[in-house]
Length: 266
Length: 367
Image: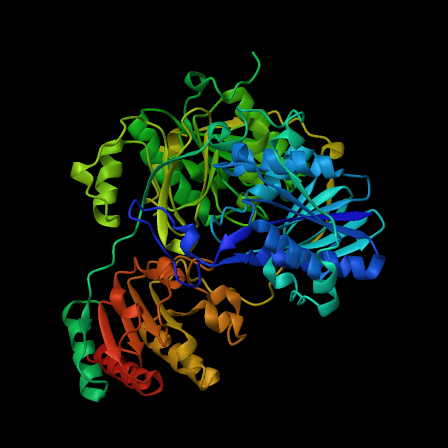
């Protein structure tokens, strides 16, 4: 059994967010982090590894600096890493991204008892689409929004979150599961892990590596192969400042309530 | 003829996936039908609802017409009773390949966001996630931008087309992006629940709606995931989206979360509203996630939104800034919540909130 975990390096949108003059995100000016949901997927994989001794392969599509993130994941306990990186892959939407990642996962090799894990969604795009789309391209069943995962041989039982409760689902391997960050608390890198991480294998898959897969076609990858395009992007305006009340005592509150009353708001 | 998603001219009509759970139509479906009605009118085409289920009551299916559907495709099969990715994807893709709609809207629920990408990947078309605004008409899109963007609309060139313009927040709400899918059909979008307004029920339209029973081709062997059980949360979930008044608490209650929540609840009771919260309070475990307003929580636009001790991170503002009247109480005069507040009080929420509750009670009693 092996576990293949898809991870993404994303700009930290909770910190300082830089927007360029043309209205696009200035990624270079922002800190990068490993996407939260993806870290939960890695941790879920490492816990299964702790219990079964199986292999964990982390895989990421992105620019060359994403190698640093993959080394960190090796230091946390993953066994192998794959960086999928090529100019031809740039500008891909979720459809095109899933084509490329599915081809890369096929290259790693999906065996009968393997499980592919993804984060539910990335904080930059918030689409939650790439996981299910990879599953479709690989013709394996998917379970999204996983809040608990139990593996027994080739049978996987997952607690899948709904807005008003949950479903318990059972599926046979090979399958793909997308994880929410509530699934677990990711472990830190260990000192030993940091020492070892540069000895562990990290392979780079470029266009040449993957180009013979039927999923990799100029019509289905990159900016040109993406079904969706950006028509316009823009910043929301700052709403006109409202009325700041003077003071914070009983008189202030009564004045506010009287305004609300006069305007028939209450 | 084989299905070809690139043959855009062959596709016609607007479809809405009308999600049901336990035989009940989800309110998101009515919101999407109401929005789909506008798009269908602009395009001069039919609006169709698509129901997948087992034994969904005919009156519920008929009622979809009252929210704008000209036709409802009813896919009824024992294996469609509860949602499974495999069964729903197969039945929907079969129907799309047969009927070829140009637009297909799906509610961005936990189920819609599982189903949409699987279908789009199989059909080879684009899908835009979690949209908050839709247009086909460029003039209407420009009107929308005038109030919601910093773009100088009158001095910007817009390509004229009737492609679906799907607008959604990106980067946690810091940016808005309008996405198109010009070369493939159907143009697919998942739409955020609670954002589109439900039109008034129109009985006359419902009476004219055509119900079409779909011949569902499905076997147990098509489904690879087994449902062991479905568990509904025991406690009543808060109906934030439908609420007229929302009183929310933020990190400002950290000094005494229990008291802060109690004070907010009393204010909410006085106003006939419900209790909301920022993400910080949910993450800290002070309140359950069904109360959360914001980018990763619910989007609300109540008549009155009261923010108590909420600093107003952009992710929170994304979920509440369209509220009609926003009242903010915060100790910090520089808190970004005051940028969107209609009325702001700089003060201690533990002192201000009870006074506000009393004053509102008094004003209500005087009426």
